[in-house]
Length: 143
Ligand SMILES: [Zn+2]
Ligand SMILES: [Zn+2]
Image 1: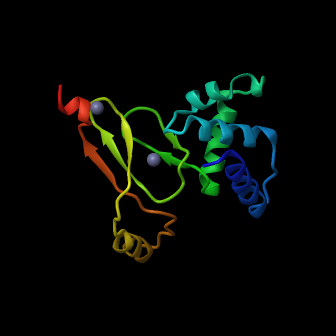
Image 2: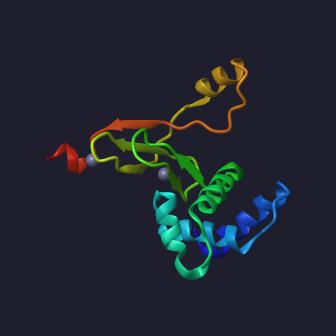
Image 3: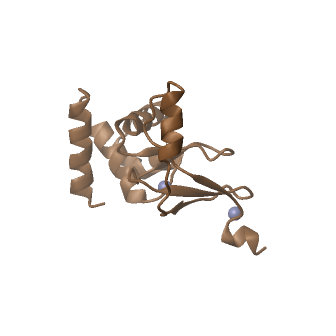
């Protein structure tokens, strides 16, 4: 996504939920967009680099979690390994390698309506549903 457009989307999302627009939130979001891949909080922190000199790891986590709640980024728990943050907030699914932990995007039309409906019947308030395909990535499968 183009930087200005993703900045605007974040500003809109923050304001809509009554959060302040701060340079910290803007830069952390921008760093993840610039990385353009699933990244750990540490990687995002590194990507922010000197742009926020007093940035701490807990702040990066808290900010990324807020961005996740706002729906502008996604949190992925790959099972093993650290939590990943996904700059893509649109509908897509993930392939998770059970050997090396690699997480890849997969675009596929998946009907998750039945799962969402069942979640509602269980008293759950679903926000989104995605499919995680586990197995071996191409390079692990060929070695
Ligand atoms: Zn692998
Ligand atoms: Zn993804």
